[in-house]
Image (cartoon, rainbow, N blue to C red; front, side):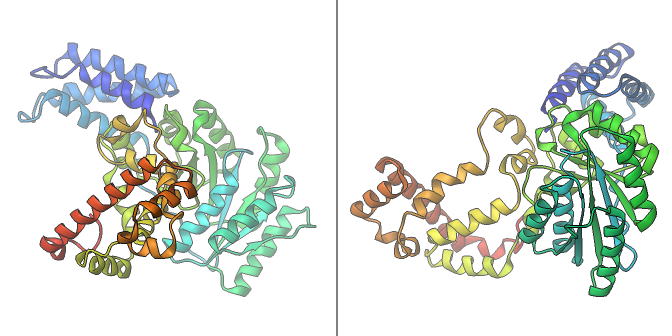
Length: 440
């Protein structure tokens, strides 16, 4: 995420390394490079100039008050603070007052609008303990209703649909009555998108909003479209006056222009960011955390939150007992892999850890990294998975044939597993009882 912007900003701030204090000359050189980095990231020049002018004024006004802070570190702090302000200052929660609360979803076709609707329903159900209802109001795209139905089934959230009805305003109104009658907390209305902005589309979405009076109207936009995303956001806001923006496909955005420009341009906050296709990869947008990631500092807070959201205390206690007895087996290993996978896309998670972004950038790291391990384990019999001591050479050869791997790979994996198992057992004898019950 934002690799190009991060690299350019790092290069701009490098100019101050080794300097003893901030001067007009070295500040000007750094500011010029920061502005170039922003423009290259598809940030409008006017925004980039205003942003860098503010940084320049603060840097010159600092007068090196913090004597213990190096000039480079001071400039990073100033840039970080201004990035946070540019992106909105603080996280903005959804307004979910009402019985039910109503959230209207708008955006262009292909922006990830329907997938986001499913992610939002899952987020509200699992993180906010709400009872959401998804509503299929895209009556034009043939597969739209089916897509939303599949998503709803995957997360266990009902979908209100009227397949034969071609009036989205009527469907939306009926869905709210249905929600009231059946005790749903939140109604999420997925509307039709178009390949481009057109008058009919704007009129229809405005009519739906007027009819249902939603608590929140969220505009969903593909962050990879950069300045086009900003222009589209402005066009929609001029007609709909929505409450917030959702940036999708953030994992594929190397520039970051949309994230940096939308709040400045439309005056409305980014409320959520979405990465990947998994339905649990939706995060509340935190400007401070995003600024840290842009500056290569990682986002350890979000990483911890994801880890804790998947933490199962009963499972942890069960594993602790098995590890102490040196009985950790392949079934337990698969269970831990699944817990990691539920946290989200692997590369995205690693990018949250400070310093990991550069180390893993050129590596092909994703959920497929686990396929080899799982193929080996699932080629074992239930007895072998439960008791690693059973694995003699004959069994290993059968496993190799079963998963299509070389016997050398099987031996290497089992050796590594055995080393890990012994290390875990050794640690359990020492400080495991004093370790925190939740990860991190």
